[in-house]
Image (cartoon, rainbow, N blue to C red):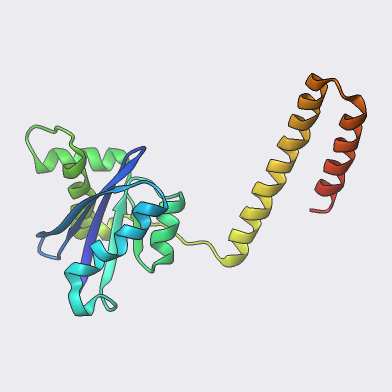
Length: 178
């Protein structure tokens, strides 16, 4: 069984539509952004598949190809296909005369695009464990550099030259160990 999922994301939520291979809507939901929404997604996608949920092939169309939501979908074993926003707008025009946007309706567009034109869309690649580890180290290094700048500014503002030198020495030591 193949399921096609459209994900129209906004700043604070994701509108989801699950579609079967004939184009019929199986489920529709609005999920909050973040971990709460991610936790609610698997039952919404799995319920239409019933007993065959573990065997179902799930293709997800979303208008971005990066971020924690997409990484969670890839980690769950779904095929995530990046949909260019211009492509989605042209596809939306084909589906309706008005061309009006609505979040629930916009979730239908990537689901149908994945169903009918999935072979033309770019899959989002999941990163290896080594690449994810490098990302974590890089973000930590960047944060330490920013903090090395912020702490002296805070201390300078507070007027403590002795503490400033001590903090600089500690931060330089931490950065050198990375």
